[in-house]
Image (cartoon, rainbow, N blue to C red):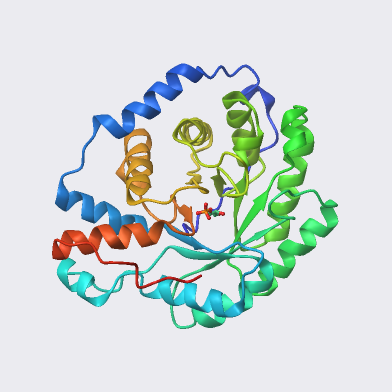
Length: 315
Ligand SMILES: O=C[C@H](O)COP(=O)(O)O
Protein backbone atom coordinates (compact mmCIF):
# COMPACT_ATOMS: atom_id res chain seq x y z
CA UNK A 1 0.00 0.00 0.00
CA UNK A 2 1.46 3.42 -0.90
CA UNK A 3 2.72 5.45 2.02
CA UNK A 4 1.16 8.73 0.93
CA UNK A 5 -2.08 8.58 2.89
CA UNK A 6 -5.23 10.42 1.89
CA UNK A 7 -5.62 13.07 4.64
CA UNK A 8 -9.15 13.79 3.44
CA UNK A 9 -10.74 17.22 3.04
CA UNK A 10 -13.69 18.97 4.72
CA UNK A 11 -17.05 17.75 3.47
CA UNK A 12 -17.92 19.66 0.32
CA UNK A 13 -21.27 18.81 -1.28
CA UNK A 14 -20.49 20.97 -4.31
CA UNK A 15 -18.10 18.24 -5.52
CA UNK A 16 -21.03 15.90 -6.17
CA UNK A 17 -24.48 17.35 -5.45
CA UNK A 18 -25.14 18.19 -9.09
CA UNK A 19 -23.46 15.09 -10.54
CA UNK A 20 -25.34 13.35 -13.34
CA UNK A 21 -24.52 9.72 -14.09
CA UNK A 22 -25.80 8.45 -17.43
CA UNK A 23 -26.60 4.86 -16.50
CA UNK A 24 -27.21 3.47 -20.02
CA UNK A 25 -23.98 5.08 -21.27
CA UNK A 26 -22.05 3.75 -18.27
CA UNK A 27 -23.43 0.27 -18.85
CA UNK A 28 -22.58 0.45 -22.55
CA UNK A 29 -19.03 1.60 -21.81
CA UNK A 30 -18.60 -1.20 -19.23
CA UNK A 31 -19.84 -3.81 -21.72
CA UNK A 32 -17.47 -2.45 -24.38
CA UNK A 33 -14.44 -2.73 -22.06
CA UNK A 34 -14.37 -6.51 -22.19
CA UNK A 35 -15.13 -6.82 -25.89
CA UNK A 36 -12.98 -4.05 -27.38
CA UNK A 37 -9.63 -5.22 -25.99
CA UNK A 38 -8.49 -8.81 -26.41
CA UNK A 39 -5.30 -9.75 -24.65
CA UNK A 40 -2.83 -11.88 -26.57
CA UNK A 41 -1.92 -15.16 -24.84
CA UNK A 42 1.44 -14.12 -23.36
CA UNK A 43 0.07 -10.80 -22.20
CA UNK A 44 -2.89 -12.65 -20.71
CA UNK A 45 -0.56 -14.74 -18.53
CA UNK A 46 1.24 -11.61 -17.35
CA UNK A 47 -2.07 -9.92 -16.49
CA UNK A 48 -3.20 -13.00 -14.58
CA UNK A 49 0.00 -12.99 -12.54
CA UNK A 50 -0.55 -9.29 -11.91
CA UNK A 51 -4.05 -10.10 -10.67
CA UNK A 52 -2.48 -12.37 -8.05
CA UNK A 53 -0.13 -9.58 -6.95
CA UNK A 54 -3.21 -7.34 -6.54
CA UNK A 55 -5.45 -9.88 -4.85
CA UNK A 56 -6.84 -9.61 -1.31
CA UNK A 57 -7.18 -13.35 -0.82
CA UNK A 58 -10.23 -13.61 1.38
CA UNK A 59 -12.14 -15.86 3.69
CA UNK A 60 -15.11 -14.21 5.42
CA UNK A 61 -17.37 -17.10 6.40
CA UNK A 62 -19.18 -17.90 9.62
CA UNK A 63 -17.44 -21.28 9.77
CA UNK A 64 -13.93 -19.86 9.35
CA UNK A 65 -11.34 -21.55 11.57
CA UNK A 66 -7.70 -20.80 12.36
CA UNK A 67 -6.75 -23.88 10.34
CA UNK A 68 -8.63 -22.58 7.31
CA UNK A 69 -6.94 -19.19 7.70
CA UNK A 70 -3.54 -20.89 7.95
CA UNK A 71 -4.28 -22.77 4.73
CA UNK A 72 -5.38 -19.54 3.06
CA UNK A 73 -2.14 -17.86 4.13
CA UNK A 74 -0.10 -20.77 2.77
CA UNK A 75 -1.89 -20.17 -0.52
CA UNK A 76 -1.16 -16.42 -0.30
CA UNK A 77 2.55 -17.19 0.21
CA UNK A 78 2.67 -19.66 -2.70
CA UNK A 79 -0.38 -19.18 -4.92
CA UNK A 80 1.13 -20.97 -7.93
CA UNK A 81 2.58 -24.48 -8.11
CA UNK A 82 6.36 -24.65 -8.66
CA UNK A 83 6.05 -26.06 -12.17
CA UNK A 84 3.81 -23.17 -13.20
CA UNK A 85 6.27 -20.62 -11.77
CA UNK A 86 9.12 -22.40 -13.58
CA UNK A 87 7.14 -22.45 -16.82
CA UNK A 88 6.53 -18.71 -16.49
CA UNK A 89 10.14 -18.02 -15.50
CA UNK A 90 8.98 -16.40 -12.25
CA UNK A 91 9.70 -16.73 -8.57
CA UNK A 92 8.38 -15.14 -5.39
CA UNK A 93 4.81 -14.53 -6.56
CA UNK A 94 2.54 -13.76 -3.60
CA UNK A 95 -0.92 -12.21 -3.20
CA UNK A 96 -1.46 -8.55 -2.31
CA UNK A 97 -2.95 -9.28 1.12
CA UNK A 98 -5.04 -11.74 3.08
CA UNK A 99 -8.46 -10.50 4.26
CA UNK A 100 -10.21 -12.06 7.27
CA UNK A 101 -12.53 -11.30 10.20
CA UNK A 102 -11.01 -9.52 13.23
CA UNK A 103 -10.81 -12.63 15.43
CA UNK A 104 -8.83 -14.41 12.67
CA UNK A 105 -6.22 -11.63 12.28
CA UNK A 106 -3.78 -13.04 14.85
CA UNK A 107 -3.83 -16.46 13.15
CA UNK A 108 -3.15 -14.81 9.79
CA UNK A 109 -0.31 -12.70 11.19
CA UNK A 110 1.31 -15.84 12.60
CA UNK A 111 0.88 -17.74 9.33
CA UNK A 112 2.36 -14.87 7.27
CA UNK A 113 5.36 -14.30 9.53
CA UNK A 114 8.50 -13.73 7.48
CA UNK A 115 6.59 -12.38 4.48
CA UNK A 116 5.63 -8.83 3.56
CA UNK A 117 2.02 -9.86 2.87
CA UNK A 118 -0.25 -7.56 4.94
CA UNK A 119 -3.30 -8.77 6.83
CA UNK A 120 -6.50 -6.90 6.07
CA UNK A 121 -9.44 -7.15 8.43
CA UNK A 122 -13.05 -6.29 7.86
CA UNK A 123 -14.54 -4.31 10.73
CA UNK A 124 -17.33 -1.94 11.84
CA UNK A 125 -19.98 -4.61 12.07
CA UNK A 126 -19.22 -6.26 8.71
CA UNK A 127 -21.24 -6.89 6.57
CA UNK A 128 -24.35 -4.87 7.60
CA UNK A 129 -22.60 -2.26 9.76
CA UNK A 130 -25.71 -1.88 11.91
CA UNK A 131 -24.04 -1.47 15.29
CA UNK A 132 -23.50 1.53 17.57
CA UNK A 133 -20.60 3.63 16.28
CA UNK A 134 -18.55 3.27 19.46
CA UNK A 135 -18.61 -0.52 19.11
CA UNK A 136 -17.70 -0.26 15.43
CA UNK A 137 -14.71 1.91 16.29
CA UNK A 138 -13.69 -0.48 19.07
CA UNK A 139 -13.72 -3.33 16.53
CA UNK A 140 -11.33 -1.38 14.31
CA UNK A 141 -8.97 -0.79 17.22
CA UNK A 142 -9.18 -4.50 18.16
CA UNK A 143 -8.29 -5.60 14.61
CA UNK A 144 -5.36 -3.16 14.48
CA UNK A 145 -4.14 -4.34 17.90
CA UNK A 146 -4.29 -7.92 16.57
CA UNK A 147 -1.91 -6.93 13.75
CA UNK A 148 -4.11 -5.84 10.83
CA UNK A 149 -2.32 -3.31 8.60
CA UNK A 150 -5.42 -2.65 6.47
CA UNK A 151 -9.02 -2.20 7.61
CA UNK A 152 -12.02 -2.70 5.32
CA UNK A 153 -14.84 -0.73 6.94
CA UNK A 154 -18.53 -0.82 5.92
CA UNK A 155 -20.63 2.33 5.64
CA UNK A 156 -24.15 2.87 6.97
CA UNK A 157 -26.20 2.51 3.80
CA UNK A 158 -29.12 4.48 5.33
CA UNK A 159 -26.96 7.63 5.37
CA UNK A 160 -26.66 7.35 1.57
CA UNK A 161 -30.31 6.42 1.00
CA UNK A 162 -31.38 9.46 3.09
CA UNK A 163 -28.68 11.67 1.49
CA UNK A 164 -27.38 12.43 4.98
CA UNK A 165 -23.88 13.23 3.74
CA UNK A 166 -22.75 14.84 6.96
CA UNK A 167 -23.57 11.68 8.95
CA UNK A 168 -21.78 9.52 6.35
CA UNK A 169 -18.74 11.81 6.37
CA UNK A 170 -18.59 11.92 10.18
CA UNK A 171 -18.74 8.13 10.62
CA UNK A 172 -16.07 7.47 8.00
CA UNK A 173 -13.81 10.21 9.40
CA UNK A 174 -14.16 8.65 12.88
CA UNK A 175 -13.29 5.23 11.43
CA UNK A 176 -10.28 6.70 9.69
CA UNK A 177 -9.13 8.13 13.02
CA UNK A 178 -9.59 4.74 14.72
CA UNK A 179 -7.52 3.05 11.99
CA UNK A 180 -4.44 5.04 13.01
CA UNK A 181 -1.54 3.85 10.84
CA UNK A 182 -3.63 1.10 9.21
CA UNK A 183 -4.81 1.90 5.69
CA UNK A 184 -8.59 2.17 5.38
CA UNK A 185 -10.73 0.80 2.55
CA UNK A 186 -14.34 2.02 2.61
CA UNK A 187 -16.84 -0.68 1.53
CA UNK A 188 -19.80 1.15 -0.04
CA UNK A 189 -22.03 -1.96 -0.42
CA UNK A 190 -23.06 -0.54 -3.80
CA UNK A 191 -25.66 -3.28 -4.29
CA UNK A 192 -27.68 -1.56 -1.53
CA UNK A 193 -27.33 2.02 -2.85
CA UNK A 194 -30.05 1.90 -5.55
CA UNK A 195 -28.48 4.24 -8.17
CA UNK A 196 -25.11 4.94 -9.79
CA UNK A 197 -25.58 8.56 -8.73
CA UNK A 198 -25.64 7.43 -5.09
CA UNK A 199 -22.56 5.29 -5.77
CA UNK A 200 -20.68 8.33 -7.08
CA UNK A 201 -21.77 10.51 -4.15
CA UNK A 202 -20.91 7.88 -1.51
CA UNK A 203 -17.52 7.38 -3.18
CA UNK A 204 -16.77 11.10 -3.03
CA UNK A 205 -17.85 11.47 0.61
CA UNK A 206 -15.76 8.44 1.61
CA UNK A 207 -12.69 9.96 -0.04
CA UNK A 208 -13.34 13.40 1.45
CA UNK A 209 -13.53 11.66 4.86
CA UNK A 210 -10.08 10.11 4.33
CA UNK A 211 -10.57 6.66 2.77
CA UNK A 212 -7.35 5.34 1.20
CA UNK A 213 -9.35 2.90 -0.97
CA UNK A 214 -12.98 2.69 -2.02
CA UNK A 215 -14.38 -0.84 -2.33
CA UNK A 216 -17.56 -1.97 -4.06
CA UNK A 217 -19.04 -4.64 -1.82
CA UNK A 218 -18.87 -6.95 1.16
CA UNK A 219 -19.54 -9.97 -1.03
CA UNK A 220 -22.73 -10.53 1.03
CA UNK A 221 -25.12 -8.18 -0.83
CA UNK A 222 -27.52 -9.51 -3.45
CA UNK A 223 -25.49 -7.74 -6.12
CA UNK A 224 -21.79 -7.20 -5.51
CA UNK A 225 -18.99 -6.02 -7.84
CA UNK A 226 -20.23 -5.01 -11.32
CA UNK A 227 -18.38 -3.22 -14.10
CA UNK A 228 -20.82 -0.28 -14.38
CA UNK A 229 -20.59 0.37 -10.63
CA UNK A 230 -16.80 0.02 -10.81
CA UNK A 231 -16.62 2.47 -13.70
CA UNK A 232 -18.64 4.99 -11.66
CA UNK A 233 -16.38 4.61 -8.60
CA UNK A 234 -13.20 4.84 -10.65
CA UNK A 235 -14.45 8.04 -12.27
CA UNK A 236 -15.18 9.42 -8.80
CA UNK A 237 -11.65 8.65 -7.60
CA UNK A 238 -10.26 10.21 -10.76
CA UNK A 239 -12.29 13.38 -10.08
CA UNK A 240 -11.14 13.40 -6.44
CA UNK A 241 -7.53 13.06 -7.59
CA UNK A 242 -7.94 15.90 -10.08
CA UNK A 243 -9.14 18.17 -7.27
CA UNK A 244 -6.71 17.11 -4.51
CA UNK A 245 -3.72 15.40 -6.13
CA UNK A 246 -4.33 12.33 -3.96
CA UNK A 247 -4.44 8.90 -5.57
CA UNK A 248 -7.16 6.75 -4.02
CA UNK A 249 -7.14 2.98 -4.51
CA UNK A 250 -10.00 0.91 -5.90
CA UNK A 251 -11.07 -2.58 -4.78
CA UNK A 252 -13.86 -4.46 -6.57
CA UNK A 253 -15.02 -7.35 -4.38
CA UNK A 254 -17.72 -9.97 -4.24
CA UNK A 255 -18.82 -12.45 -6.87
CA UNK A 256 -15.65 -12.30 -8.99
CA UNK A 257 -14.74 -15.94 -9.51
CA UNK A 258 -12.89 -16.34 -12.79
CA UNK A 259 -9.68 -15.43 -14.54
CA UNK A 260 -11.89 -13.62 -17.05
CA UNK A 261 -13.14 -11.38 -14.22
CA UNK A 262 -9.54 -10.68 -13.22
CA UNK A 263 -8.76 -9.54 -16.78
CA UNK A 264 -11.97 -7.51 -17.17
CA UNK A 265 -11.37 -5.39 -14.06
CA UNK A 266 -7.73 -4.81 -14.95
CA UNK A 267 -8.77 -3.68 -18.44
CA UNK A 268 -11.18 -1.23 -16.79
CA UNK A 269 -8.40 0.18 -14.57
CA UNK A 270 -5.96 0.46 -17.47
CA UNK A 271 -8.47 2.12 -19.79
CA UNK A 272 -9.75 4.57 -17.16
CA UNK A 273 -6.65 5.30 -15.07
CA UNK A 274 -3.64 3.94 -16.94
CA UNK A 275 -1.20 1.08 -16.33
CA UNK A 276 0.27 2.89 -13.35
CA UNK A 277 -2.87 1.99 -11.40
CA UNK A 278 -2.43 -1.76 -11.81
CA UNK A 279 -0.39 -2.02 -8.61
CA UNK A 280 -1.32 -3.41 -5.19
CA UNK A 281 -1.02 0.01 -3.55
CA UNK A 282 -3.75 1.37 -5.85
CA UNK A 283 -5.76 -1.66 -6.98
CA UNK A 284 -6.97 -4.80 -5.21
CA UNK A 285 -9.25 -7.65 -6.24
CA UNK A 286 -11.23 -8.88 -3.23
CA UNK A 287 -11.94 -12.55 -3.88
CA UNK A 288 -12.20 -15.87 -2.08
CA UNK A 289 -12.34 -18.23 -5.08
CA UNK A 290 -10.92 -16.40 -8.12
CA UNK A 291 -7.36 -17.65 -7.53
CA UNK A 292 -8.30 -21.25 -8.30
CA UNK A 293 -9.38 -20.37 -11.82
CA UNK A 294 -6.37 -18.11 -12.39
CA UNK A 295 -4.10 -21.00 -11.44
CA UNK A 296 -6.01 -23.32 -13.79
CA UNK A 297 -5.57 -20.91 -16.69
CA UNK A 298 -1.87 -20.43 -15.99
CA UNK A 299 -1.42 -24.20 -15.73
CA UNK A 300 -2.99 -24.50 -19.18
CA UNK A 301 -0.80 -21.67 -20.50
CA UNK A 302 2.35 -23.47 -19.30
CA UNK A 303 1.46 -27.13 -19.92
CA UNK A 304 -1.25 -27.00 -22.56
CA UNK A 305 -3.68 -28.91 -20.35
CA UNK A 306 -6.07 -28.17 -17.50
CA UNK A 307 -5.36 -29.70 -14.11
CA UNK A 308 -8.22 -31.86 -12.84
CA UNK A 309 -8.70 -29.62 -9.75
CA UNK A 310 -6.88 -26.85 -7.96
CA UNK A 311 -4.22 -28.01 -5.49
CA UNK A 312 -5.42 -25.34 -3.16
CA UNK A 313 -8.84 -26.43 -1.97
CA UNK A 314 -9.12 -24.62 1.35
CA UNK A 315 -12.73 -25.53 2.29
O1 LIG B 1 -14.08 -8.69 0.36
C1 LIG B 1 -14.11 -9.72 -0.27
C2 LIG B 1 -15.37 -10.40 -0.64
O2 LIG B 1 -16.10 -10.73 0.51
C3 LIG B 1 -15.06 -11.65 -1.43
O3 LIG B 1 -16.26 -12.08 -2.01
P1 LIG B 1 -16.31 -13.52 -2.74
O4 LIG B 1 -16.30 -14.55 -1.63
O5 LIG B 1 -17.61 -13.49 -3.52
O6 LIG B 1 -15.08 -13.65 -3.61
